[in-house]
Image 1 (cartoon, protein in one colour):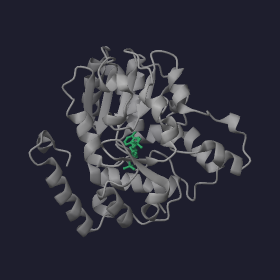
Image 2 (image 1 turned 135 degrees about the horizontal axis):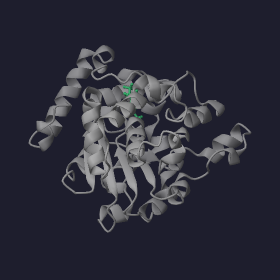
Image 3 (image 1 turned 180 degrees about the vertical axis):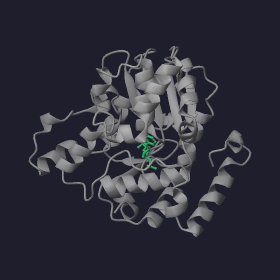
Amino acid sequence: EMSNDLSKQYIMIGKDRTVFTSLYLQYAEKIKSFEVYNDDVWVATYPKAGTTWTQEMVWLIANNLDFEGAKKSLGDRFPFLEISAQFDKKKLFEKQNLPIEDYKMNSIESAKSAQRPRFIKTHLPFSLLPEQLQNGTRSPKMICVIRNPKDSCVSFYHHGALLLGWQTSLEKFAKVFLADKSMYGSYWKHIFGYYNRRHYPNLLVIKYEDMKSNLPSVIKTVAQFLDKKINEEQIQLLCKHLSIESMKSNPAANLEEFTGMIRALNLVVKDGTFIRTGVVGKYKEELSPETINKFNEWIKENIRGTELENEDIF
Ligand code: A3P
C-alpha cells in the first residue's frame, strides 16, 4: 500500500526531494545527460493535470491536424521519458512469463531515437530535467499544464486504485499527497519550477480548467506558441477529436497500450483508463469537508505572496 510503504519503495531525489522509485537511480545519469534538440516539443506536468489530453492536442496542432497519423498510439508518437524508471518491467514480465520484447524496453532510448521533431512527455520537476534544459543551452518548446491540486489529487488516487491496484482509501492518499510524499513529490515545487519560468519564450503554461471552459481559445494559444496556423473550421474538428467521449473511445489516444500492459501483468484489480470523468471540481463530491479545509489552508499558505495568487484555478 503506497501510503504505508513509502520508505521501502520510494526514495527522495535532488533538491526538491522528488519522490521516486529507487529504480530511478539506474536512469538518473541518462536523464541528466539526455540530449535535447531545439526542435523537440516537450509536455511537462505534475501527474493527473491533463497530460494525455494536452499531448494529443499538441501533437495534432504541431502536425497540422494529421488525424491519419494520430491513429498511431500516443505512447509511440509522444514517448514518456522516465516511465522505465517507474516500473521494473523486466522483473514484472519475468514474473508473469511474458515476452519482454513485446514491449518497449527503455523509454529513454525510445525518446532518444524518436523521429524528429520529437515529442516528449515528462512528469519530472524542472530541477530533474536534462541538464541542457535546465541550463538553457537547448530551448525546445515546452508546454506545462497545471490543474487544481484537489482535482489532481482525486484523479491521482483513482489512477492508483483503478490502474495500479492500490488498496488505500482516498482520504489516506490525500494525507500522503498533502505531505509531498506521493510519486513525484511536492505539487508546489513542481508547479513553481515551471510557473516561475513562464516568461521564458520557449515555455508555455496552460491550465486544465481553461481547456475545459474554453478549449478553442487554448488551441489558439498553443498554435501561436508552436508557430502554426489554424482556422476556425480546423479548431472545431480538433475540439471534436479532443472531447472526452471521443478520446476515451480512441485506442490511439487513451493510452490503451499502457493499460493493456498492466492488465497483462495482472497489476490491475479494476478496469480503468487514463481518461475518466474529466470534471472540474469533482473533488467536492469525493473529499471530506475536513480534507477540503486542509487543502484550502495548504493552498493559501503556498500561494501567499506569489503570482499564483492571481490564478483562478485554486
Ligand atoms: P479525472 O481523473 O479527474 O477524470 P493525465 O493525463 O495527466 O493522467 O490526467 C488525467 C486526467 O485528465 C483525468 O482526470 C482524465 O479524465 C482527464 N482527461 C483526459 N482526457 C480528457 C479529455 N479529453 N477531456 C477532459 N479531461 C480529460
